[in-house]
Image (cartoon, rainbow, N blue to C red):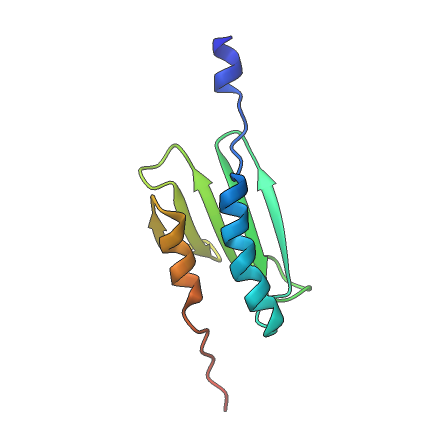
Length: 102
């Protein structure tokens, strides 16, 4: 019985997926994001956001129970923000994506 708890896979809750998908649908409708993927492991779960079909994920929301902060937002292995609240990570993503155009 104790081994079952240790081997439990980390997953996003239904409410968490709903929060992420709400923002995802807005970003995809304006053409900022193109696709997503979800990965579940024993120690973490990742919601990866793709801005291009050719490249790997541009952003990753990682849910991890082993760190002090449950949710981490990273871009190409650089941590942008982390929090115990998914809402704070989502709010960081709601900021406009500004790109310098020459």
